[in-house]
Length: 427
Image 1 (cartoon, one colour):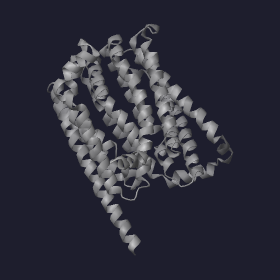
Image 2 (cartoon, rainbow, N blue to C red; image 1 turned 90 degrees about the vertical axis):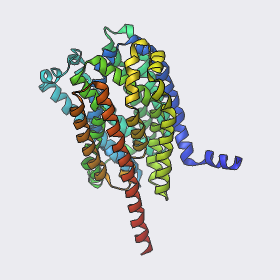
Image 3 (cartoon, rainbow, N blue to C red; image 1 turned 60 degrees about the horizontal axis):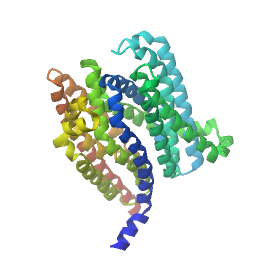
């Protein structure tokens, strides 16, 4: 038994996951401790208005680097991977400049879409946030490639500490909207700056070997990433924030705030696992010999974890939220119960969904994402005539089914890929 435990603990995959998990645990514990304080300092309306802004930032940041960030871990040579890193950051910068021009040209039309007047001011921060998030993703994949998992974990601690620290200084700001937004940006700046400093310290010598020709050659080689993964990533992130966008149009910012806190709290423990597991899974899956078994173990392991962690919410959601967040958040507790199915199955599937990139079947993921988004919009249009809780129930159950289907599609295509490889090797 002891030798078995030692064997597990000495396993490279387990050690890498644990390195990220430790950093993420500390980072998430900072945010976790602050949640009961922040919900008593900020109103549901303030949470709801800023959730809409952060949703837009996340959607656009996915498109900003053409999803070349995910290709960084794949080349055999570090030189080519470095060209992809710098090239993806350059694309992000260009995208951010274009977004600034769009804000300048269509300012009144863009700000007129939103209920809160604060958007007339914070929309100018959109290009900056897009650049920070987009380039940060590229840097994270570079350090993931070099297996600097401890650095990634420390970086997340810095990010969460920066965001939480600024948001706790509520009295410094004229209103809660600014406290939320400035906190978000502060965390991103600190995290981004830390990674840039480490990149220059470790890889500065590579800059003199950069070649535009090599960069474009690498872009052509991995062109399926912007062709399939970029629209898929946009659709996936848009789907994640679809209820925030939809509820912002059909209900009040306060209800959006309740939904945002419900989604944030029940995803909190899961994101601690997924951010650690997902990074290592992508790198390990690219090297492992028995992909099918690793995929199945990973999926059902994460599914069981989600069921175990979120079990109390199903029965005592309102009581837990009122006790932790305050009496004003009972609505968020009720909402959390309705979105449990979607949360559990999306977590289990998303932890292993990068397998489509590894087996070069990104087009399947794109097709699934399009179908899912169309169905999700249909569920919202159908259920909006009823109360919000019915809408959430339909949306959650339908989404859970779609994620189960995606997990099955992934397994089937791993089998096909491995079968084709075995035929080629036998010939």
